[in-house]
Amino acid sequence: MSRSGKSSNKCDGNAASGSRTNQGSSESSHLYHEIAHLTRLGSEPNERFSRVVPGKLRLRLPISPVDMLVGREANYSGRGRFSSADCCHVLSRYLPINGPSVVNTMGSHAYVSQFSADGSLFIAGSQESHIRIFNVDAGWTVQKDILARSLRWTITDASLSPDQRFLVYSSMSPIVHIVNIGSAETESIANVTEIHEGLDFSLGDDDDNDYTRGIFSVKFSTDGRELVAASGDNSIYVYDLPTNKLSLRIQAHESDVNTVCFADETGHIMYSGSDDRLCKVWDRRCFGTKGQASGVLMGHIEGITFIDSRGDGRYFISNGKDQAIKLWDIRKMSSTITCNSVHINEEWDYRWMKYPAHARNMRHPQDQSLATYKGHSVLRTLIRCYFSPTYSTGQKYIYTGSADSFVYIYDLVTGARVAKLDFHMDAVRDLSWHPFYPALVSSSFDGVIAHWEFPGGNEEPVPAKRRRRWRREHL
Image 1: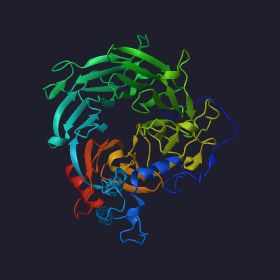
Image 2: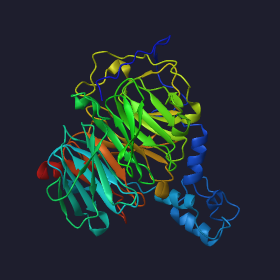
Image 3: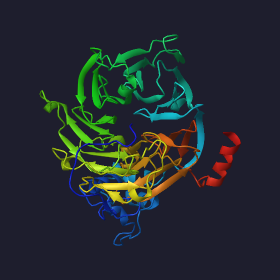
């Protein structure tokens, strides 16, 4: 989370201007790669649905739901029903762009917003030490109102266990706290009404400057037995919950590690991103005594704020302070750092300065990413980005918050911006797409947790002017 993420690694050559023609971005062409084919397989209908009348090919795309219903009744696909890709083709057309309605106003900067895996719960965390857990199925009622313990600066992250019984939260401190959210109490005040157990990620160090060891990202493993955390001391930590102790520390990067996540449900592979501008891949089965990365991916020219895995152990996306999201295939990673010396301005600080205009078209001379998506703004805070849900969209989209107060949705394959949601009055740091329904919730530094939905019926999206007028009157 340092200002520009400097690195001592050098290489020959300077950053080139312009953008790669084969990269997906808001201004460039289609993505030509295996992932494009996989995305189409997961989100496009059976080609036989294009023949609503036998012998005639429908050239108009996308195929309408009415045509697909006709095709299903005629059993053009040979299945007698819709496949998951057929369903995604329909559902992915109904983007959550209407509204929004206000779920809650936090009273300070809202940092975290996440749906549970089944969409029944929603977690919102803010700088004022509050974490609220909403029961979505019960009309967004507050199921748990948590007053966090021993915060430094803000809640940086929160994660719900797979069984939805426990929540962990982190701040600018090496202590991560865990709360039992399954208890009957609605109000959970740290160590007053309920115990918030502290999990020590400091390894007993004597360093008094705990801010350098603050936890920027913390995640449960898919089996709920481990936590993985990214730290300001350039390290990744793995905490074993059954034994209640650290099981692994990796001195992973040369600057703050802002984000870390598991690549898939096995928990063997992890991805990390740092202010040293590098994404790294870690295979815990191959550490031995060295604990070195399995590979490194270069392409960002500024620090990395967030990583989201596609969940297949192969692809992930990263958000960067160079104002870009990048798509990666770990099969293209390098074994060593061959180039990481691209500099924009040694004095540039993303927390309060605008991004230099001359750097907007610069690219890394050895960019290994598959595609780059631009248009949003990554300033002031560690803004997050995600793949859209598998069930309803086939992961056809990438969506991100932005420092300019908008929510952006990009098409993964074409790179086109398909939606720009206007409601918030300040930076949107985190957001979450419902795993099954066309609904999205965004959290902003204006303190508002906003709920976006598809219009439904014949309703039209609420005009932006009306949204802005509502904000002035109510916020």
